[in-house]
Image: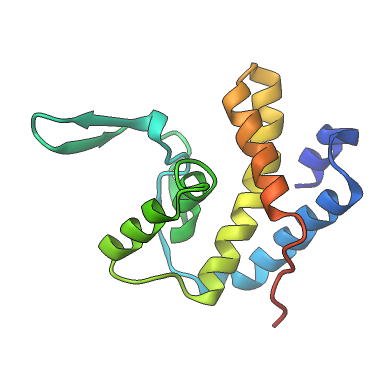
Length: 150
């Protein structure tokens, strides 16, 4: 996180930088309080292959896979296709069988903030405007949202 903040230089406001640090700190506390699973690490539509004839979803690009918080794979959905479309989020969780716990919601938020920082740097370095746009939307949507204190 510190290395990414150094690389970001003046791109982020002091409030955004503080939010990144706060989220990193919160995730250290939240880690044992949220379920861990085998996580894809880059779960988003551009890594999906839909077989409409067979009704199957194939997932590619597993290079970031590792054990991680289950909500980590929801970040790119929450701040991607679900953004501004609450019905998609509701349908997902209806199929999932439950909503997120308060700790999972908080972990999702914090993972999203850290992902936004990483995505901003990666997107700028690689000319990926979609990733840069998602990163800025995440920071915009996240600003002013206080983290729960425990």
